[in-house]
Amino acid sequence: MLNECALNTKAHTLLAERVDNAARDRIAIGMLTADYPQMKLGDAYAVQNALRARMEARGIKVTGLKMGLTSRAKMLQMGVSESLHGFITDDGAYGDGAEIPVNRYIHPRIEAEIAMVMKTALRGPNCTVQQAAAAIDFVLPAIEIIDSRFADFKFDIMSVVADNTSAAGYVVGGRSRRLSEIDLLTEGIVLTRNGQVAEVGAGAAVLGNPLEAVVMLANQRAELNTEIPAGCMVMTGGVTAAIHVHAGDVVVVHYQSLGAVRMRFV
Ligand code: OOG
Ligand code: MG
Image (cartoon, rainbow, N blue to C red; front, side):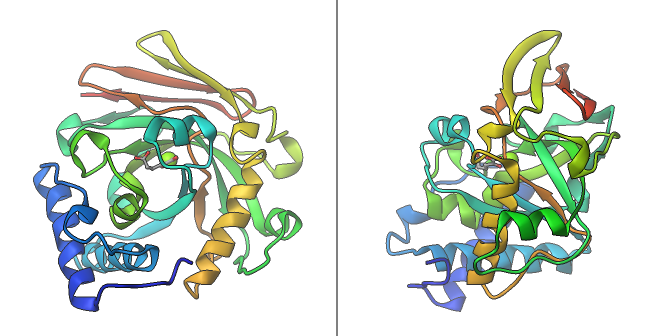
């Protein structure tokens, strides 16, 4: 259950501050469950909400939602086998070809994703693929920048949800497609770093069909008494394992029908 809690509001506020400070100071911290072993998933999402409120109070705007750990490659890489969600913000938004300073982050990684932009709101529970498809306006290629606030990128599900699922930024490509123009399952993705192929994958790696990530997001949000709003961008989760990036790295991700997305880390 996503709304089951064992901690009080004061603890949620304290933990949000801890995660927020780690991100702002770029100093990794230990897993939250080390101090709060009784923490439940509801507490983790409550901390994430408190973190969101802190960021919004500084003028940061939420631009969309993200699913995480939706592919086997990501689950195996991180050792967490449950899909989860978080939010993305305008202070981490980059356009195609962006130069991205690595000193904004602790230990950044990037992962190739398929993003959807919603035409209408989508609300669970019991949301179906058909409802999700009807609610989606178009599909975009988007690379996520993740940066766990936990030392060595090591976490458990409670800690990573509280840490807004490692969200740190994203680069959106310029070519969009309608759902009718793209085969999401076979949409091929080739991720290159400095001209060398680092990872390859296809859309079906994401829960069998990236639309299922949108369905799962609507249903998870329903458990938290909320929805996917109209106009929201939804990142459906890393198709392949994430790769480390360092200053000087040039990353180009080629999508079969969504074009290429480029970025350089400086
Ligand atoms: C957690 C976030 C996972 C994805 O796309 O699977 C995620 C992490 O791997 O640090 O964003
Ligand atoms: Mg991701």
